[in-house]
Amino acid sequence: MRQNGRDLSRRGFLASLGTLGAAATLGSPVTAQSGPVIKKPIPSSGQQLAVIGMGSSRTFDVGGDPKARDVCCQVLQTFFDMGGEAIDSSPMYGTSPEVIGYCLKRIRNKQALFSATKVWTETRANGIAQMENSERLWGVKRFDLMQIHNLVDWRTHLETLIEWKKQGRIRYLGISTSHGRRHAEFLEIMGQEPLDFVQFTYNVLDREAEEHLLPLAAERKQAVIVNRAFRRGELFKQFGNKPLPEWANEFDCTNWAQFFLKFVVSHPAVTCVIPATRRVDHMRQNMGANYGRLPDAAMRKRMIEYVESL
Ligand SMILES: NC(=O)c1ccc[n+]([C@@H]2O[C@H](COP(=O)([O-])OP(=O)(O)OC[C@H]3O[C@@H](n4cnc5c(N)ncnc54)[C@H](OP(=O)(O)O)[C@@H]3O)[C@@H](O)[C@H]2O)c1
Image (tube, helix red, strand yellow):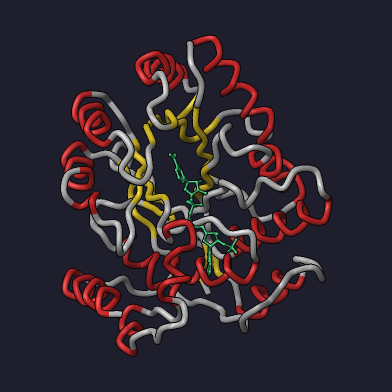
């Protein structure tokens, strides 16, 4: 097994899972993935990023409970052990940033971290204070990516972020939204401003982004992070008990999580996806989509037709 350019034997991989602790819920059999991690380039730099990242809204907002924090650490350890890189958070997500920082201090094999958070407040001074606080909570010297959350006071923060990028205080800057919120304004900003990244919702049922957002991101050479790939878990409720089509093995997909994630990351304009989970077994399923083949255009069409027929 290759992981972030390093070889990891099946035995080593299983041993690493063993160190996750007795509290780990291993709901499905461990399957070592083979082959290299799937990566895509960030257009503004060429840096390669693993296609499966991790979100942290709700799932890491566990407060101070040591047992819940321990489970988060196991989830995060599994993420890194299976070739994960991008972690997304926001000051909007309660204790998530603090819990991410707590876990990062306690786990190993995390050198591939691509840290992404957001600024979500008004005024320049509040924005700077919030971003500095996020660095402290995560325990990082600087973030790889800072996004303006839901376009809140975006003109003000964009100015700060452009300055910060010039000074090397962040590596990339971007904007985020979700479920169709303020798309017209979002598109306008994408068309005019020097963004490295954009983040919005896209999944096998919510495909509005295919019309304008994804083509514009490709044209403007902006990396795309996709949120809500599972529609906040709704897709599992709707399709989880339906049969996975046999032809899913043609793109190395063994469960519904991988079906939904590989659909998203196989869009040519998508750079990575950030599914959120509070469970180790779910993280393992999700990270399986970091490996193997991706569906081509014809297969993607078939995937849509299949879910729409269920
Ligand atoms: N405006 C913005 O910037 C914005 C807006 C929305 C989201 N986001 C970001 O995008 C991330 C993802 O979005 P989201 O958290 O709203 O929704 P999501 O990733 O679509 O869905 C998360 C839900 O899916 C479930 N799940 C995950 N893996 C699973 C699996 N393998 N099998 C079954 N269920 C599974 C989780 O439950 P379990 O815990 O039980 O696994 C959780 O309830 C957020 O966490 C956040 O970082 C950003």
